[in-house]
Image (tube, rainbow, N blue to C red; front, side):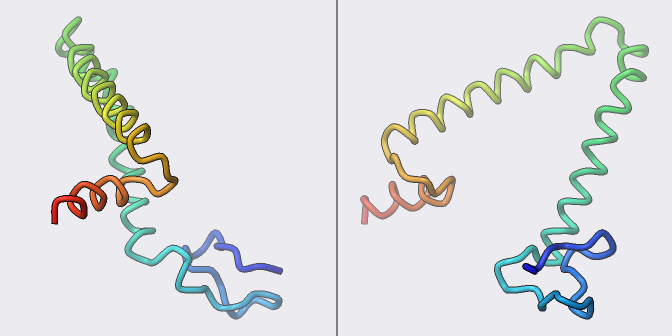
Amino acid sequence: MPWTASASTCEGDSSAPGRSAPSSNGPSARSCSLFIVGDILGTGVYSLTGRVASEVGGAAWAPFIVAFAVALVTAFSYLELVTKYPKAAGAALYTHKPSASTS
């Protein structure tokens, strides 16, 4: 049975029968903590939207429109990079390739 993360800990329970110790490729405690903090902050944003809308009225949609515009520009930037460097590597490739070609 391959190692899987348990509900009680992000790094799994290596003492359980049939489970091996987590590998170095698995999620670290730091990345799991950041994931949890992101979930908490994201939940707060969505749960407070109604309260903010009741306070400011129709202007509550303005930040969402700005965020949409920024996300759209980012998406088109990634589209440009994907067509220039067609490799499955993500942001690491896009930051490495341009700097490697100038040196």
